[in-house]
Length: 387
Image (cartoon, rainbow, N blue to C red; front, side):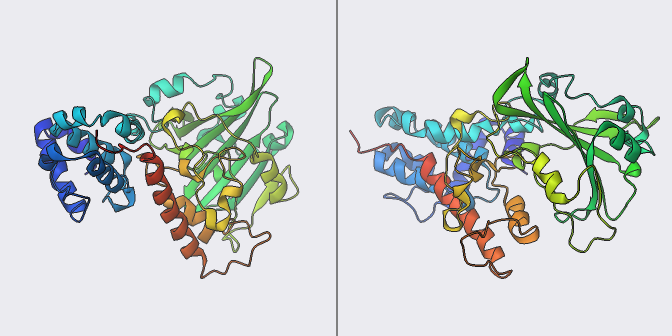
């Protein structure tokens, strides 16, 4: 059970006791004092607070590795010794750790954004950009039987393939436009070369212009579509989300399976690289609809050993520190897939060849680097020497 659900069913007074017990297990070896119970914090110095925050900020040592759990523990500790908090002026040195952790509480009411529930997120999407073309909206499963001819007539590009990342069959369709581009992903589990029977569809819309003016940073909108029980036409729904965790840098290159169960089929492009050049953007995306970026480590240089930060530096492309799942945990499964399964990262240009045996170790090293750097950033502002 995650901490947020637990908090809803356990009274606040009991929650402090529970968090105290968790801290006793997690922090049993620590600090200039034992730091094993919130009762002892009445006598803590600022150095003790710094030692405590250094330990609690190491999310990789938590059972669930969620920032919300960290913030709850810090807040409960502060509430248990208010006189000490006031005496040592602890509020300032805990602001970042609390703001970062609490941001992800909102994700429990929304699958797409940490800032708002899904109905509000969907209402903020540009209606015209999110509208399916009539040929798709009127068709069962969002795809007419003659979808190839429809795509060719409209200049849409597509790839029908077995995914290398998951055991899925996918149809990716790219619909270019002047002010916005739409990428449609039809998919199903297992091997199925007929996309007109796929049960789900996702939209990834990139808005390039607003009111005819090019945006400095393109905006990205997601929508998950299921198909009605009666006519099987596309209807908006929110059973899946968290899309931005994998798409902080926009739509991603597709990676067909190297030995697919059915041949990869392309339309409107000569090869996969040509389609990927249309999908992938080498620029920073506006993520203000998804995160409170003022509370995020937007320029954390994760993956330094392997050169990941040469591209993912926060200016050229988003830092890997923003590759998070719905609860705010590092999206290590996605990193693993890119490095071990897809083998599209790290870029090997100018580096020794990466062997298959090295790849799981690289993924683990990047995860370790993320947690170490995140901890250092969270506690960058020290409580300092006691007055």
